[in-house]
Image 1 (cartoon, rainbow, N blue to C red):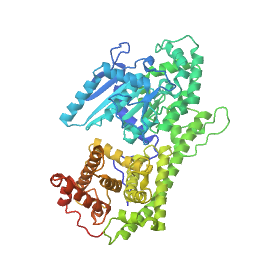
Image 2: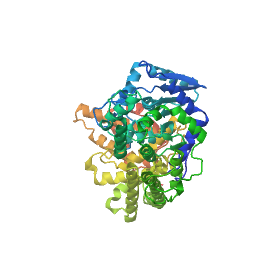
Image 3: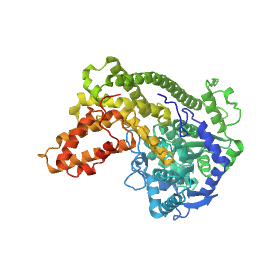
Image 4: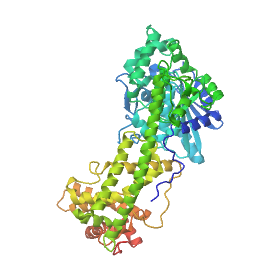
Length: 640
């Protein structure tokens, strides 16, 4: 089995900066960033009736949101003001959740402001008209959402809303300037699982506080915001000392920032008068957001926090003139300030991050800067080591999987039932070596699922074809054996298909494949190839559990049952008929299912007899009967 293939959707792991930098260079080289900034500045902030501006530039629609006011963003009934993005509205689906089915949470003030815009403006109408127009023209069309400050959060939510519609031929892109963070880790994970991370580019000035303000609980920063931003007429506040307020505000972010539930996602371009650093890895972006704000000098700190929030035009000009980290770094010969310790950069990763830091104007590294750099480097190195170990373990487990496949075919050879039946009937007599292989494979995939859940692997790990294909091959071969064990030993626990009984690894691996297929469909590359032969392994790894449950339903279908129960059982059996019929039509089912004494064929004979006795019209209306007869199924006598 070869799991190495990577398609155009896949990206190599561990590249915390390269992909983001390439994207940023592309956006700047074709003037998209400049145009985006100009669009945001073209909207007056003093007009309460201006919610957005729809314009076109060289045939590309730009939807720009004004900066709004910081006061529009507050909803301070909780420390971090989060709520479910779905939150009883029609604009976001319940598919926005993480691998554990936890809903994506967003800032309550941002969501309420977005919903208010959709209610009071014609943005929804214009988006629908645009979608219908593209659908009729059958052309590929980008659309760019842009915004500054709170408007950046509106651009982010609008882009998520548009992506969540999963419209063909439309490619949304979001560009923000000085935007606050929007959502939690579940939102970031959901965005990543659908390959949407590259659709978001956030430009952040080195000392702009707004992109960092949700890294501390709102009640800890609100008084300081009032003091600081009243100077810039962004918030009218009290008369406390802005310098002292800035220091306390920075301390709150420094000590509380990493524990904040808000997480960055997408590409972050952190810029200064010297240049820009482009970061795609979420954890590295968080480190940089905290680190660069801490570098603000005490003198002029209040002015910096305000002026850098409104001067992105100048920053972009400097970035384009300076380039992206292309200079030779002299940072390596510097010492820690006040420590007397020479800075030793031990890896190319550290050097790469140091170049990024130098591009933002760090001519010397403080102790905290170097610690952050080392932490990011160590994280990347740990990723690399873990991936290397997993690749080695995968190779070993491929051999186990191959031996397991050979064993199944061997014990089934010459039998008139399927490998599932053979394995179930073996019970405690199963080959010790083969059972040990199953346990080893189970441990391997359980470990991977745990590592992904705990963010111990790169964010793009679960999107790579190598691991999706490996997990799919494992699931389709081994889950039927797990199902056989369950119904042989634990049938009293109810249905295997329930969440409490079906192992998490199978559910997660199936979701990885479903997410990948859905992404390909959205991009117009997901049309399933028409099979000419039946599958060697049934594609739905839950198939045998569905057979077992259908057999239970048929057994329970007794005249003395209540009519509502009988109606429910008949509907369930009818749905199962349609399910198997579709698999036969698509040839996504293995021929061993139709061996004479398989569990399925035994059920089929009983079910057909029942229907012929109780329903005169079943023979002419059954989709499964027609499919079986069309393919001449049910005549195979022996396996393999």
